[in-house]
Amino acid sequence: MSEVSFDLSIDMNMLLRPATRVCTRSLQTSARANSVKQSLQAFSGISPCRNRQNTSPEFSTKESLTSRRAITSSASQFQQIGSNEAQRISTSSKMPGDDHYLTLQCPDKAGIVYAVTGLLAKENLTILDLQQFSDPDSKTFFMRVHFGHTAELGGLQESMKKLAADMQMDYQIRRVDEKPKILIMVSKIGHCLNDLLFRVKSGQLKVEVPIIVSNHPEFAELAKNNGIEFHHLPVTKDTKEKQEAQILDLIAKYNIDLVVLARYMQVLSPRLCREMSGKIINIHHSFLPSFKGAKPYHQAYERGVKIIGATAHFVTADLDEGPIIEQRVARVDHALSPKELVEEGSNVESQVLAAAVKWWSEKRVFLNGVKTVVFN
Image 1 (spheres, rainbow, N blue to C red):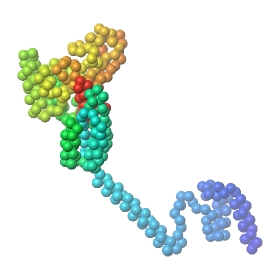
Image 2 (image 1 turned 120 degrees about the vertical axis):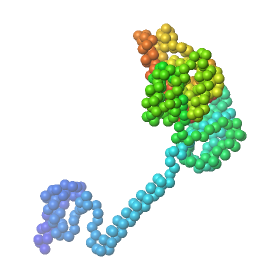
Image 3 (image 1 turned 120 degrees about the horizontal axis):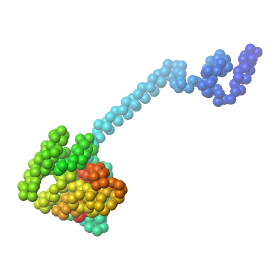
Image 4 (image 1 turned 90 degrees about the horizontal axis):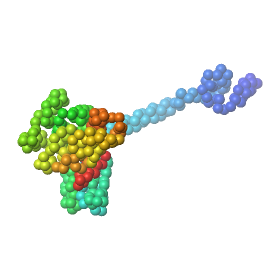
């Protein structure tokens, strides 16, 4: 009996240390702590504490072991159920390729957004992005909706036809992954052409370029290297009508959606502008409306400007007067020569034209009289 009391007194002295020390990792590495641990185990048959790394409880009976196996089995089953559920949701979800653009414009009035979004909700479609603008001058409403996810548009098309008739609305629905076809026209200066082809090849511009037309043969090899058909169509004052008739034939043959003038240094005839109205984008190498016509950089040099720029616009029969899509500028100073201004401006031209084509291809550009609405 006295021996037991002696052991307990030692244990009590050792246990007078702060309680936090008993439950730390130092308890397992300290020799004195191990001594206490062994003494308590000898006295009561239990461990004074449990190793943090051993978080599983000990089971001493068959019933407890059975319970433990049941718990482990249930956890595995729940994990398997969750995995199957996630797989089911993933495989049943719609693919991004089933996304569409809905673009429309109509006379402005109350309830347009409510009506259109109501039709989308009726078809159980998800609005991924919506942009709208009401022009107070023209009293015209513009809207662009990116929605998903469905490959079947029969119900929506039927509903939109009725709504368009009621609201005098022009609208279009197009798949997001559908690539419009572009005809690029160029003369002898190729930086914009090179930039566009690079962006198409790298996937930055989601368009198709089946043909390139030029009034000079310089870029035939570039077109060939990119796997694009090249048409050399020389033009003079006397052959202009015939040459443009060939261009219109190519537009019809390849189902061209947009003509891009990538420094094509010819003035288009009123006929071609009329037949492709709203479907020709030009890059003009100045910040319009300043310095129209030929050699704008030389005009800028003579005026001593501090800013040069570039303008992408739709082509009309009025030279460099079409609705503007995008403009950007670069700062210059008195020390730059006309040649250096041209070099500085070429970078801006490439950026502006690429931006305009990209926004058009994503259905972000709307004609609004002599102006544009651009949801960029």
